[in-house]
Amino acid sequence: MVRPSRSRWMELPRRVVIESGAIREISEICDDLDLKSRALIITGPNTIDIMGEKIAEFLERFQPEIMISSASKLDEVDRAKNLARDIKAGFIVGAGGGRAIDIAKLASLDRRIPFLSVPAAASHDGICSAQASITANGEATSVSAHAPMAIIADTRIISGAPARLLSAGCGDIISNYTALLDWQLAHRLRSEEYSEYAAALSGMTARMIVELAPTIKPGLEESARVVVKALISSGVAMSIAGSSRPASGSEHKFAHAVNKIAPGIALHGELCGIGTIIMMYIHGGDWRMIRDALRHTGAPTTADEVGLDQETIIEALINAHKIRPERYTILDSGLTKEAAIKAAMATKIV
Image (cartoon, rainbow, N blue to C red; front, top):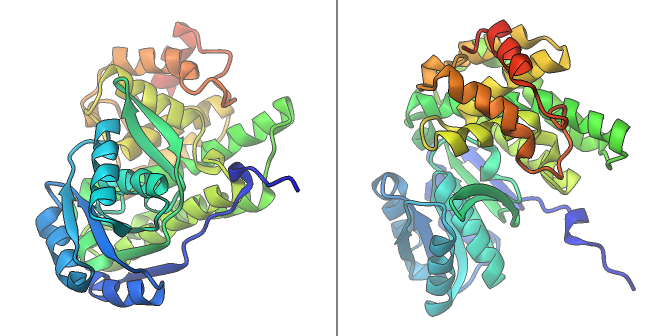
């Protein structure tokens, strides 16, 4: 009997709780999932006080161990794996931002134990996806992991996160527009496998955020709830597809190219949003709709708003096709400097 490859497995969370005060239910959720033994809680230096220690209190009978991590690096994953082994952890909780959740994903995959995703902000779709972003050899790369067994999104905590994080999450979701256009292009020109179901869910999620953009405001629990649900839907679309294709295309290549040139200046979702404006222009689509929706959510729509100069944007556009060359997008033949300048100027990014 031939077993299917992991890329064809559909991994979905068994429990999703999105409500005010949700972390108070974490012990009950663990019981419901029949989790045993000790818990390893991976959190960050900025989220240990906000949620890490509280979760440890709620999981007291699971003899929790807390690991504070401040970087998405392979040595941090190794530290988490070793700690999970040493304490004989039965499950891992990723509590905080993207770094903590990604490290929890990879460490739990290595140890073959479940992990729970407890986001502190609605800033990216990694809270649900089976993909993790990790820094290896000085470069950020996306690797396969596994989906969380449960997602516990406390809207009280998430709505209290910096406004910039919520708008970055909107940018990450809206970027599905051009990711889908690239996927369709790869399907037509390279016969790449395409999932109508995954594409439909991803597209619906992006359209919902665009339509609701004027109502999404920082500090509101309802806004946090809407964006978290959209991020989870985007993650589910990736699980259905067996890859990040429904939510990652040329705009993500651009975002990674910028981060390679000027690391740490802008948030991932912010760069994806800006990249979506430019890529929609290159695709010949309604880039103004994308720009206006991003503005409504408070997301940046120009290089200057995120502290980037024209040279960085142009260089990123020229070299973006070198990022993940196996993933075909509209950028695959590469942009000339003249074409990159024209696209950036036409969309008023620079």
